[in-house]
Image (cartoon, rainbow, N blue to C red; front, side):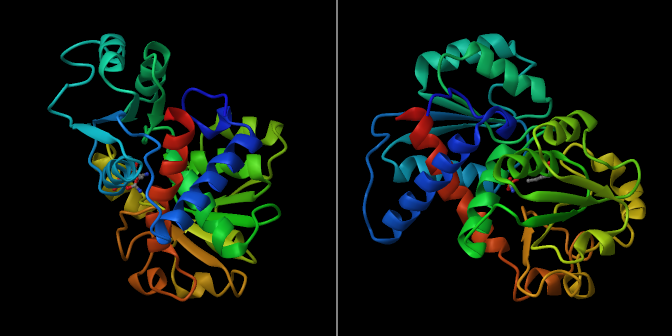
Amino acid sequence: MKIKDVISLADLSTESIYEILETARNIKLELRAGIKHSTLAGKTLGMIFQKPSLRTRVSFEVGMTQLGGTSIYLGPDDIKLGKRETTEDIAIVLARYVDGIMARVFDHQTVVELAQHATVPVINGLSDLLHPCQALGDLLTIWEKQRRLEGLTLAFIGDGNNVAHSLINGCVKLGIAFRIACPRGCEPDEEIVAAARNGGGIIEIVHNPQQAATDADILYTDVWASMGQEAQATEKRAAFDGFTIDDDLIALAKPNALILHCLPAHYGEEITYSASRSIGSVIFDQAENRLHAQKGVLTLLMS
Ligand code: CP
Ligand code: NVA
């Protein structure tokens, strides 16, 4: 793979995305078979977090260990990104020590700037705009469960947020039709939608969850108020009334439809507990696949 960073799936070709997914699938099968890897022996991943995390932190850390390397966690109070020194200097200095950087940030430009100035690969571990590693884990999950990607329809019932944006970017590259049902004012970013449509993607924006869910192959949701939007939580809860994935909504989708949620979940809001444990729900396989998909990314970028 010729790319240096993974900042947005929009920057990756269809072939590169498949290369990541295939590498991930092979690594996952080898892990299950007890085969040990030393692909990244002696290599270190620096992990910058401006926001909390369970899945991203643990899966990157464990992923590095399983590949024979190591990782360093730099939390919000460690380097005080953007407060103690500039993003540019942090990128230049960190790249003298580590072999790759993963960053979870508020402002998307911060991770873009890290990539511009770091001489080592930079991976976007979530920004206010995008969450590409999540979408890679999601695509791996859908590919494994449905045995194909092209021609499927994914209905996202929720906020037009970072997770929705990266799914749009991924779906357009892999021939999955993307539908979102959200309240007015919560639509995905217009530029991301326009770029996806220009790239031949089918992107439908509706304001009725039943319309979006009907005959979908995948129902997907995420929290209504993302990290950093806590002040808007009450307002969003009111706006999203009726946009919950529940058993009635699932009944409108295809009989074998998958239910996905990137987690963490707010049960009773964007998804009921019952829907999250329904027969089509793959939310915990999806969470596990973050590990395998990211090991694919780490292998291709850092070895
Ligand atoms: N889905 C996800 O990125 O989870 P964390 O916020 O726990 O990393
Ligand atoms: N949209 C959510 C995703 C969390 C993994 C957030 O940004 O908080």
